[in-house]
Length: 551
Image 1: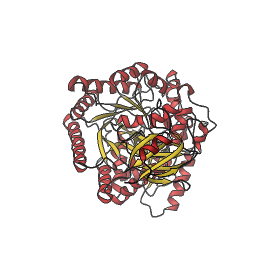
Image 2: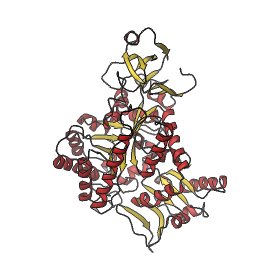
Image 3: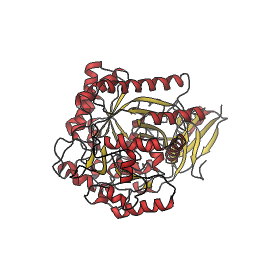
Image 4: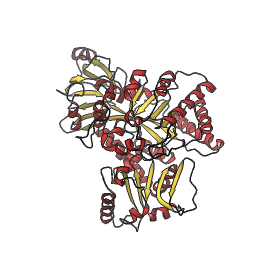
């Protein structure tokens, strides 16, 4: 077996309190040794080959703790709208896309922001001014609503009589006519299936390849899919059938949709367990490298603050509020059922009322199913959360899975305006979670936000903007130290999915996943991360990405 030693000026092993190293030895896809250059050389033996990386920074490969792989892979092919500042600019991009693709059967866009509408609701009429002859479906930046034109309303089959689904809304005008704005489960149950049905298997396979490639280029070497559905699972399994493995090992949470019928909710949970067992049987006896493991299920308890659909304890600035998407008793019953089958809970909760309900789900599991050391429930996002909830999360061993890129100051104007009071000043309280001893995992939730790991790290360290670099920082007292941020983006994400023995740290026996940066987050000014080059991404001992001047 060939052994390779990688030497560098700085090697971060994944834990903030551990000493830095100088070298890593890799054998058969796993870490053989890590430490000083002399220690690693002694462990590797005289026959080991040596790669001197020089003045670079080496860290465990980034762990993307929250992503939507096929959505990300499709998003790179959609009309990009995140930087549009007006409806006119959105319309211009859609016209250009239509002109460039006269044979297209539909126009898909992503990442429009409420700020571009200057306080108005999005309507089909606005989009009809740009494209009227084919369906247009635009996902919001947060993926919690969809904006469609009149042709899309017809294609999707939404009429004035179509009822609102549980936890969602088909926005209507004073005459009861659908306006083209689909919120929460209305987008998930109408717009998303329409897009999914129009994609071929070849399309989905390409989207998945796109996502893996995009992540590897930014130094990500494992990820957690946070809304696995049947079509997504089929794409992963086709890749496993074709290649025998995935480009990197992944975990996944199966998305659950509130049905209003306890039997149907239970059936969704049982299906998730069946998928988990099927994948486990498929990989039985194999190394964990390149596998897909279903860790648990995903509940979406509420929406987002930008659209005033996150469930809050007190009303928004406009006087409105939102109920949780899942009825309380239905959510508790489904959570207890999932927990009884060994499925980990991942719970989307952005508003402070939703995070309180998330705690109820976890407490019900402990009460009904008894204590269990490996339960490791997690709450996703936690943008507006009370101090009491944070301390209860520490008590219950709940991971806080958060996304620094969601509070890039360039996209927060509408977020701040919707709250309009002291809650706007204490959002994303990373420091309170750290002080309370809550486990933390940092990801991006791509494609709701840019997926580049160094940029996510920059915001975690500075609370400043990547998109508009001269913007004032948002609540800089919340920021992570560089080492703590790195740990939360590596070991923290691995711990959250019970994978810390395999990924997230450079320790003997772990998969040899690491990233090489030309900026040192521990020593350089944070701005160096904005333009840093990912020199190498190594997955299971193999160089999967090189900037051209690497090994």
